[in-house]
Image (cartoon, rainbow, N blue to C red; front, side):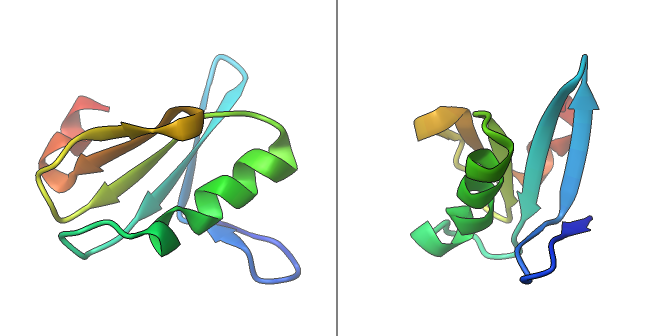
Amino acid sequence: FFRDSTGNEIDVILENDGVLIPIEIKSSVKADNSHFKNLKWFQKVFRQSGGILINGGQIEKNYGNEIELIGWKKVMDL
């Protein structure tokens, strides 16, 4: 869990070979644009691409800047 002084936050941050991977977790089945807000903020501040949005759905999709959408059932594959 990471939160800055202005309230921007990321639910989980993984580190893999020196690369930070931000992860947002949402309980909703459908992803909407607001769910990507904090991942985009993290990418801008830390000047890197990548990130994962986990939600309650079953759809897997790749978005711009290497953001992946995955459902809860795929978490074990991380």
